Image (cartoon, rainbow, N blue to C red; front, side, top):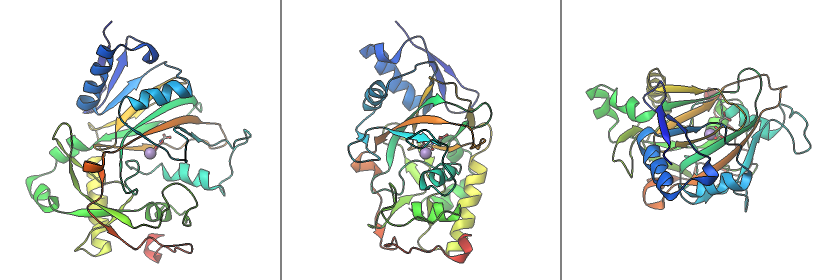
Length: 300
Ligand code: OGA
Ligand code: MN
């Protein structure tokens, strides 16, 4: 059997049809991994994977990054474990709202993520899409002067910073990613370890550039982000229950789109770990702190 890859109306992404993931042959898996490297984001409609099948899907791309100890998948959902709608005071709600900013997963961790696989279970009638942006094409679209200007720059990535900017102050240890061991420093231009293609490596967790004032860094990062996340490099996925998507966090930004948070939205997320050789930061600074972290006034 052969899978069909239909490119999306964007520089990234393809829709994959023609088989059930749970039944893919080794030949089809080779097609999928090749397609992942070519398209950077893949949509598999109408799959309705069980959590176990979802985790097995993730393992085809690499080791699983557990967002909770011993738990290979997590709910990305506005429902509490007993099925009630979360209130805005809940940290998990604040995490969902933070996801509405362009980002790539786990860049604030010592090893940033390779890929993420997100499956839809319950979706609201309106909104709640996920949008993707191709940072390979975004890099290629920069003029030569800008490419030269950023070639050797790097930024620190921090979830405290990105959540504080969104209006949510978290304490150390309060949720995944709020660690104490320093914010990783990552190049603004990432060379893809498999394809060798350059991609802009930015997003909401990036906040400080060595050798620049924080204000200049923020302005540069904002300008790059705004220019990058434009057609034809973006794709908005309108979820149907049963869809699963996988994207390459090394060259794709994504964000959640708002919806009526009184309506349930239940997604399941499996994160695939980066490789230590290529997804480690360049270094770390010790400005992530213990409880009581306060964002600078400029962050509000
Ligand atoms: C994520 C994420 C976006 C969404 O799961 O990492 O950013 O639309 N999700 O839920
Ligand atoms: Mn995410």
